[in-house]
Amino acid sequence: MLKLHHLANSRSQRILWLLEELGLDYELVIYPRDPKTKLAPPELKAIHPLGKSPVLEDDGRVLAESGAIIDSVVRRHGQGRLAPAPDSPEYDTYVHWLHHAEGSAMLPFMLSLYVGRLGEAGAPLMPRISSEVKNHLGYISGALGERDYLVGNSFSAADIQMSFVLEAARPTGALESGQSFSNLGAYLERLQARPAYQRATQRGGPLDMSGMRKR
Picture 1: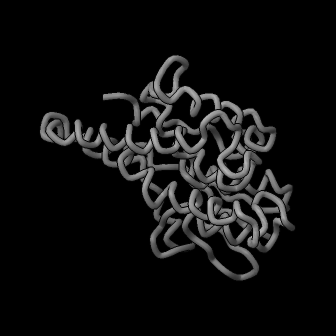
Picture 2 (picture 1 turned 180 degrees about the vertical axis):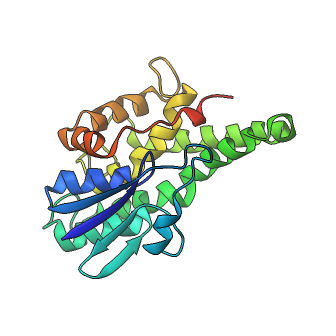
């Protein structure tokens, strides 16, 4: 059986959602964050040397990194669901979004979070960081356009992977109706309306990305 080591209010919400979306049997182990530091508990280091989440155990293998976990689960357990066929024109686009979420898009949001904690000391960097946030949101918004989903206009695991970027962007106000990236706001609402997303939230707890709010 699959076993997901899930850190509350973290990227591993995507893996929980994926497992629910595929209707797989799995065991869920939830780890609370430290109430003061908000960091992961040391118990996670016993599962993976980095002490991070998500971590998925699958048939004796310990997998880390959201994109790699999603790729493995879809290939091994998806039975052709949530990904285009490898020989299809859409497959490279699917792989692109799997990697883009963490490889590029999340960096400016994380910089905004950490640099923002520096207060006035970090203020000179914030205009450049804000510019990069808008740059990435503009790229995603343009790629989505008026379609419902990113890959061939069909829901896929790439949408699950990219959802965390939009969760991070929402507190900034950029996705609200009437704003530049309102199509991304509607896209996120479609994703959150899926029954599997709601089941994952019930089991793993809601995401609170208020630390990403506009500064």
